[in-house]
Image (cartoon, rainbow, N blue to C red; front, side, top):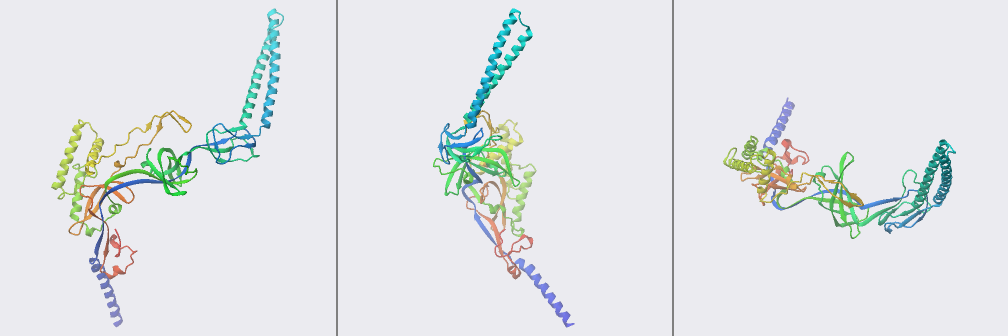
Length: 504
């Protein structure tokens, strides 16, 4: 009996301790807030990629005839001019082919002369009535056949001479020999494809970076954007270029779609060499003196017990009014800072919204579409929230431009397609940050978000200004020994973090 009483007592004590830790411990949580300031500053957004440096124009020099490489006049790094002799194929058989073609031509010419004389005799006899029409027609046919044979023999001579000329290899462009693929004495066969003897790069003072950009980033890349890159050979030096072409052909690598972006580079100092790997950063957006907040502030979600429910309800009420058509204004127009749902603050904003809408419709004679109306209001309201800073104009709807110029040896005579330009100020969204009020509760503030550089985000709001404190996260210290003993890697129920540094 005593043993049963002892066990029952221990069970009661364990349950009591657990209840104490569960209820009393939770009431003992003390929250510490991590703050940061809203600041004014510059934001710069880059698209990063990896590419390869290549000459603007590179030509593989081959041969159209087979034979043994007899002479080479250029080596690696040789500077050659267009039209200079750079190699010679053994022409022994080619010379004999020309002689053989000459002999065939002489044979064909002799037959032609004989048939011509025979046709003349037949013509005289036919005119005098001493021969038949049949014999004359046969002589004429023989003459015409020999004429064609002589022309064919002449063509054979021309072809043999052309092949003999092909045995001498000339530089097709001026430039630098970057590769030599053959040696003297090597036999090259041009039966099915032209073998490569040299690779000549034209004008190494101008280079291109061929880089691949992921499909998730290609929408932010436009023709004319500035780019900078580094190479391993000069890690401390930044080279600069300009995006000149975005090729439409997709490249799929491990189920990831990429597009080739061409960046023109000035290599006047001849530091860059073909084949170098370039770590590229393309400048896609840059804003000066804008309101910005850390990205962590937009991701923070506090626990329900420290939220100012009245302010949160007012914010939801404001959005409900706009959803009913009362305030369907441009994104970023903060309508949550009134005295509550339907309060005087929201009513005044709705009145201003209606007045703005009516003025825009009147300016267009009442013929503006809903989409155009929303775009006009976004622009006007966005400029007001940004302190009058004008937004960039939207891209032109036409994505082609007529060109007629010679580039890289290609006589361009057709329009060139270009994708639509990226306009950073049109890439807007909504977000929510939290501020601590005098009662120790967190109030939500809706903001309109802009560009994001990975650390900070541009925001526009009538309720925030530079220097305001916003909440990035919270930690709490608990009086409960169970909370203090629990591993900091183990999450607690209700989405809370254990004491000692669990940021939200």
